[in-house]
Length: 53
Image (cartoon, rainbow, N blue to C red; front, top):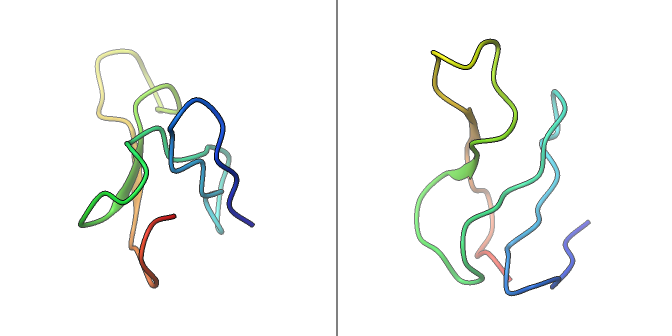
């Protein structure tokens, strides 16, 4: 499910916690820099299967 809150893509990660915090209409994978295994590691990323709305 996708929402349009504060101009974020907001697509939910299908396999783990997190929602995409990139701009609506972004190209490439979804990304959530708040959801990460540790603060020193990268955020969660998952493939985009449809255009970000």
